[in-house]
Image 1 (cartoon, rainbow, N blue to C red):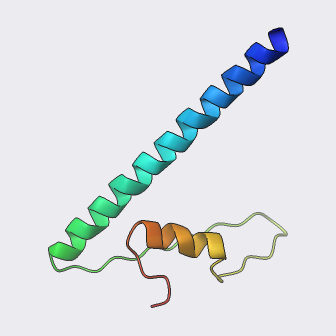
Image 2: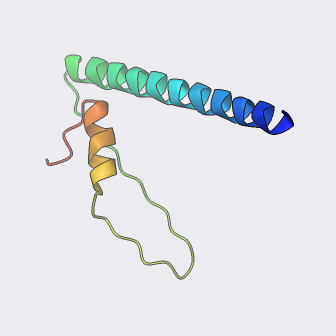
Length: 76
């Protein structure tokens, strides 16, 4: 029984996290659209690295999907 409660709690936490992520993507898309409506352009640049790790500037499929979700064309 305790294990079932733990799993239920983890599933609830996962669902809340997914819902928050979707809401954040909607908010980001709305902000980008407002910026575009006002005549400006948008872009996102992520930078960071760990010591000894090779960093690639190539976008992954997941990166491109996220950018499209917030109305940014990753192929420009």
